[in-house]
Image (cartoon, rainbow, N blue to C red; front, side, top):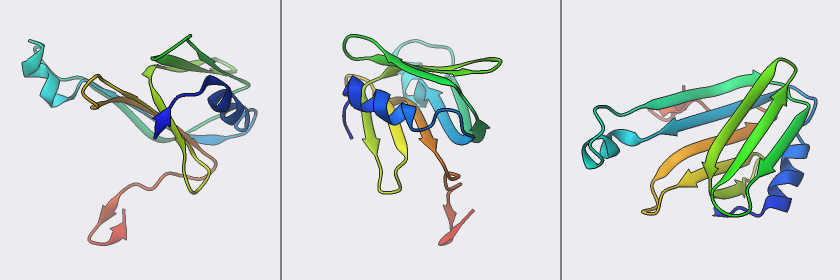
Length: 125
C-alpha cells in the first residue's frame, strides 16, 4: 500500500458511482488495544460483501488521516482515519488506516465483484 493521494483516490471512487458494488468496511481497536490503553473491552464493526449503491463519493482532509464518505439515496457510509490505499490486481479499491505503529485500525474496500470469504483447507469458504 502507499500513502493516500487524494486525487487518485477521488478518481477511483468515481469509478463506482451509480452502480451496485460490494463494500467491505471494518474498524477495530483490536484486542491488543484493550489492555494497552486501559479500555474495558475491544470494539469492532465489520461488514463484508454488503451491496451498496451511492451517487456521491468524497475524500476529505488536508493530510493524513483522511475521511471517505459515500452518499446513498437514504443515508451515508463513511470511514475516518484512512492513511493508505491500493488498487489491487483485480481493480478493487482498498483503503486502510494504520496507527503510528503500523497496526490496522480501519479498512474500506470497494469492488464490482464479491470479495472472497476466506480459505478453509485450500478452498474458498
